[in-house]
Amino acid sequence: MANSENKNLKPLFFTIVFLIVLNLVGNFFFHRFDLTKDQRYTLSETSLNIVNQVTEPLYIKVYMQGDLPAEFKRLQQETRQLLEEFQAYNKNISFEFINPLESEDSSMDNIKNLYTKGLIPVNITVDDKGKQSQAMVFPWAIAYYKDKEVNIPLLKNIMGASTTEKVIGSVQHLEYSIADALNKVANEKQKKIAVIKGNGELKEIMMAKFLLQIRESYHIGPFTLDSVAKNPNSTLEALKKYDLAIIAKPTETFSDSEKQVLDQFITNGGKTLWLIDQVTAEMDSLYNPSGSTLAFPKDLGLNDMFFKYGFRINPDLVKDEQGSPIKLATGEQGSATQYQDFNWKFAPQVYPESQHPIVKNLGGIKLEFTNSIDTLKNGIKKTLLLESSQYSKRIGTPTEINLDMVAEETSPNHYINTGNIPLAVLLEGDFKSMFQNRVLPFTQKDFKTIGKPSKMIVISDGDIIKNQLDKNHEPVELGFDQRSGNLYDNKDFVLNCVNYLLDDTGLINIRSKDLDLPLLDKEKVYENYTQTQLLTIGLPLITLGVFGFLFTFIRKKKYSK
Image (cartoon, rainbow, N blue to C red; front, top):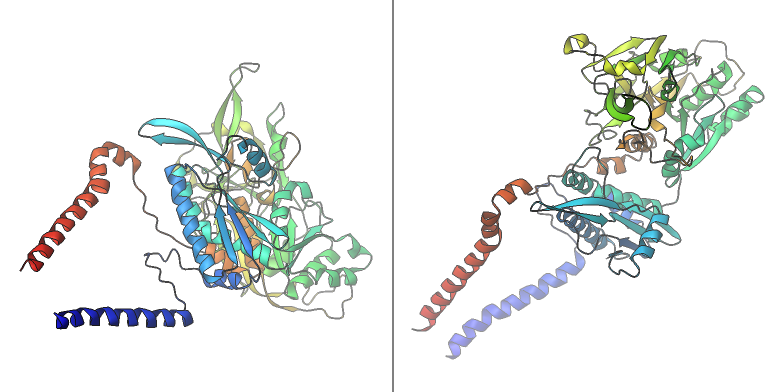
């Protein structure tokens, strides 16, 4: 009997010793194992670097708790698991899930409070075995750190996508959304952006949503070129203090002195984002009794500059069968006026095919009266970011544009070898000055003919960065088209452009992370509801029952001897 007890105690003793040693080793070594196929919960190096910079308590409130629809429960679960991963690497990070609609007495006050913070809920239709109901969900979180707070969008609004597809896209962007928020609250701004003024560029209110977004991460300020006429050298020195210059839809010709300032900013390593229209054509000008307008070339005086850098924006218009919807009145005018959706071919809806981090995983991007871009061989690396569809072509200008064009009938034969027109290009390399071997407009002691390594992005549409205004003349979300109700990915695209130009490539790479999220097919589940219940609930219970019976039977048989 004593020998039997000693035999039983030995394994127990070694097990206890092993666990104690394993616990001691665990105090000195930290590692988490991600067993998912796509390494969903393995934080990227960029995220870990951001987490390490959180030196004081950082608190995150997540407003997704309570009785949520099935899709949002998946988003809630993925958010919780990812936040646990962030917390595991830094104990200063804590989070809480809150149900803003939990109490009927305080729910309205909570909703108003969240609205004032810019947290807009989504109203979704819940389909439960054919029964439909409405539900309000706040797919948002707020990060608090020191005296800062930043909103974290958890649901990515994908145009034309179902709720399930939106959740899948949102899970793919979760790490980016959280890491970007932590980066904004934990790090001080360093890079500076100059928004060039003085040549009829877009007014600030027309790109307010873009400016508000990048202001969270970078220093930003207007920079006028008017002073070039009086003191060009001091203007150039002031511009050199910035890291990026944004030239958004200028309408007035640049002087040679202004071009020299921009040229020398580039050769000194400055980055540029060109948003250029080479044709004068505005959508608002079509809404008149005749329903037509004249599109004509625009002379900005930048062609020789662009040619030297290795590209050309042509004074034409791109007409694309993959256009954007436009609502127009049909039938008799008056109280019974009917509105119908038409395909507006001069507003291409572009779906990026490139795997470059700037555009990877982006949805539809809307352009308006865009021009074609040609690239030239000059030793500069060029990457195509956006292009029109296969069924598109160039329309020369001047030309009349009218709303009756929506009724045009076309066929694939009209677009043989005309499509896939470049609309946005990334250029990287050592840019040569356009004033090389030329008389300088103004004397400059430190003139550079060959520049430092730099980058620029050229987009042949200034409206890509333009937000619309509502009835109260307040800016609406960038990419949101009030006429059709569609939300395009314009904001994500231009933000990615800025991040890439300013070398914040780590965050872009997180955004383009690929995840494989298998979800149940609801229709198949409904068709085989009883069978599904047996497989998901009955089979595990039967398996446990059989296992328990066998275990008990074997144990009785063993110890009854």
